[in-house]
Structure formats: structure tokens, C-alpha cells
Image (cartoon, rainbow, N blue to C red; front, side):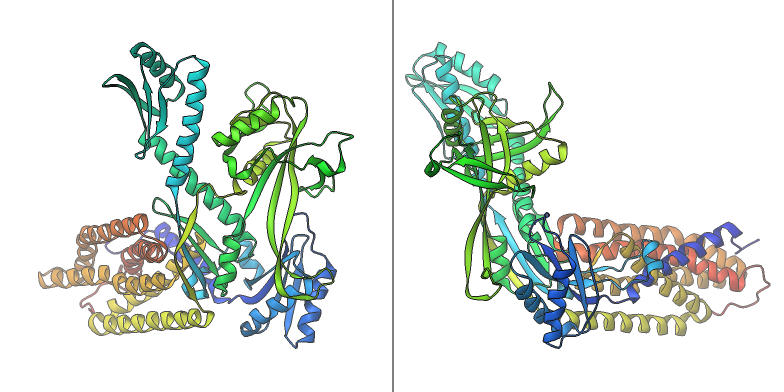
Length: 616
């Protein structure tokens, strides 16, 4: 029978729509403005006394709050009014002290039954919630030059060990490794040695006047790996620094080959954000002080793991974190125990060798040095001017098994988690390559709210105009299309919520565009039905032919638009990606509702009946 769906297909459509309404319903519950308190280190526990300090200062300043909750790691205090959120944050920060991170947040109000289903509201982007945006450029060339200088030093050492005398060995301005020899046979031996030792280079032998040269060109893949390492390492460092701000849903992501985007929703003080992001931290490798050594030659430090243990280290540093060019967690191939592989610069490797060759059996400590800003004194009183303090703690103390060079390993770690954390700390002690701010902007919270209002209004106006148009031109069929259009918006919001997509202002533009595009398929179908009626087909045959014959055109049109959306997402950045995501999801949901949804409604109205005239 024409225009009748089997029961399973109707149930499938009903199930999808029901799930759509459930997962989109979470967006009806606006989050509460809140202030979050957490410790500057994982070992700092948040207790009831800390929460009482925060609530007491709010009460003293007549700021209404409710629903305060806390765990060992953080506390959350909800506020009645968003306008007092910044003031509440500053008051609480002054009350609890500099050992705690106090940050703005948005506390969800989603009912527990929806939360149990995994239904969560969409996240708001920077342009809708307000905050700061930074675009930073990584100087990957600096790390490449440092690597080449290190290889130059190592190559000289290798040639000296092999008793192959060279006239000169240097790195040129175009990043080539050039070695000059006076004898051809020595050049050929050196070339064989360097090809086996440095497989990341392509070496060629050249003759120039009375000299014999080896010219090494680094492989493009190796250069890409070094650049990727620099950007990824700086990403790790920036994420660690951004975490100190305690921002809800920060964005720290790579853009292009050597740029990093940092977006901090809710942060309005650009100078403060730049200070945190650009703060300095470093590492020092120091030998453990020998028993009986003079007090003036040693210092005592606490371990960073919060265990309370202490150890004495020599005051003189062997090398610092500025000499660390790489740190990766791995496993000892002989014992299968976790370890951390360290790579130092050429100068660092030389210093490490000279300091450890005579100290095998002693322990080498890794000291993490962090520069922090204090706004209060020991009594909790606010300082007139912030002061910089230096915090030094031990992150590793391991026994030297043999003399160490530029490449060595740290063993004696308990598990892989400790090895990964140590590698991260070693890498995050200093940036892998210098960075500079190339763009910065601030979006106020009031502008974010205005953007939301304008975006919602644009969706409402666009939806209303489309609904009226479809009803006037297509009557009963237009009514069915309008129901499908409403369901399409619900499904679009539901899918974005399920996948945790971030809603931005361009994303709202994508929704508005989707509203217009969603009825395109129905217009094609309905126009085809009119043509089939004009060609003499019966109403039931015209409906069936209209949906079937328009399908290919609809698929082609939507597929080409989907390809464009994918390309936009692949090559675009923040706001463009938001538009592309919304557009792509909207295309998929609109095809479902326009083809299956609309036909299901039309089938319910006309299917299985004797129809003499269609209201279309």
C-alpha cells in the first residue's frame, strides 16, 4: 500500500525524536553563577573551614549565595546574581589567601534524572560568555637551531673519538651541517660514521678546491617532528599555567603550524591573564649533599608530592631546565620498569658529564622552581603591592648509575603515572621555544549576554518567517514541514549537547542558516508532487513519486554543502569551526526530518486513504 511506513520505521522515528527532546531539554536549565575554590597544588585539601571563610565574607558584604558544596579538591558556592560574581571572587580570594585558586564558574542546574541519562547543556563559547582571547606564535626556529647546535657538538665529539681530524664543522645559516676535511679518505670515513650516527640527515660528499666536504641536510620529516614537539610542548606548558586560573572550560589549542590559541571564558583582566600565561618556572639538577658537608654548601627542600619528606641538596646546580630540550616517559627494555628519558643541550650535556663522572653512586635531585605572586602577607592582610616569591620543591631524587651525557634516563620510579608526571614537569619547567603574543582581545560578559539575545532573536525571526511561508504556500504539507522543522532544531541542539560541542555566535548563525536550508528539501519534494499531479498522477501516486524522485537531488545538494562544512572545519579556526560544526550537524538532522520526518507525518494524514485532492 502506498504511503504507509511499517511499524518499526515509525517507532524508530519516534524513538529518535524522543531522545532528541530528552537530550536537548538540559539546555532549558540555565546554570547558576558560582565561585569555585581549589588548591594551588593537588595535596592541598579543601575543608569546611575554608568554605565558612568564603561564605562569611559574602554575608558581611550582603552578597546572596546558596547551595555551597565541597570535596577534598574543590568547593563551589552558587550566587543569586551574576552581576556580583566578580566582586564575590575578589572577596573570597582575599579571605582564603594565595594558597587557593578562586575562579568564576557556572554551576549546572540540570535535574538529576537528566544528568543520570548523560544529558548536559551545550557549552558557551568565548563570544557568548565573555572572556579573553590570545593568539600566540611559537618560534620553532629557535628550537631547531638549538637542536642543530647540540648535534654539531655531538658530531665533533664523535669524530674526535674516532680520531678523524676535521678542518671545521659548523651549522650554516640555512640549517645545514657542514664538515670540512683536508684528506679524502678521512672525509669518506667520517661520512660513513655520520650516516650511521645521524640518520635524520641526508649526507652528501663534495669536493671544493683543496678541501673535502660533508654536507648534511636534515630530513623534512625530522624538522616537522621538531616543530611539532615545540608547539605540543608549549601547549602542555600553557595548559599547566592556564589551570592556575581555574577557568571553566578554557581553550588552549593549536592553530596552523606554529600558533596557539588561548581562550579564557569569564576572565576579564587581560593583564592578569597574560601574567599567568607568561609566568616563569624552571628546573635545576643538583647533587644530594654529602653527610658532614658545610651548611653553607647545602640547602634543604621539601618533596613536591606532598609527603612532607625533605632532602639536602648542594647549592650549586649541575644544569638547569633551560638546558632540557626533551623529556619522554618510557620503559627500561631490560627491566620493563618505567623511566624518563632526558635530552640536554650541548652545553648542558657537557656540564652533566663533568659533574657526574666522578659521582657515580650518589643521588641526583631534580628541583622544580616556580615563581608565584603573593597578594597577602602571612596574616592574610592584603598587600599594597603584589610581591613575587620563589617556591622550590624536589620532584625526583635518583641514584646516578653511570656518568651522564646529553642523553640520560631517570629510573627508580614507582609506576608509569609517576614517570609520565615527571616527564611532564620536566617539560613544563620551561617553554620548548620562545613565544610572542600576536593578537589579544577582550569580550565583556554584558556583550556576551547581548550576543545571546541577538542570536536567539535572529533564530526566532527566521523560524517564524519560514513557518508562515510554508503554511501560506503549501498548506497541509507546509504544516507537516513546519513540525519537521521544529523537530530538526530540537535534534540539532540535542546532537550538539551529546557531543559536547561549544556554541558560539557563528554557531548561532549556522543554526539560522540551517532553519532556512532545512525546508529546502521539503520545497523540492512538494514542488515535485505538484508536477506529478499536473502530469495526471493520482494524489497517492504523486506523493510517493514526489518523495522518491526528489531524493537524489536532495542528497546531492546536501552532500556538497556537507563537504564544504568539513573543509571549513579542517582549515578554519575557533569561530569558523563553530559555524562549520553547527552547519554539518544541521545538514544531517535536516535530511532526517525533511525526508523521513515529513513523510511520516504526511503518511499519517493521507496514507491508506482514498484522497481526491491534496491541500498543497
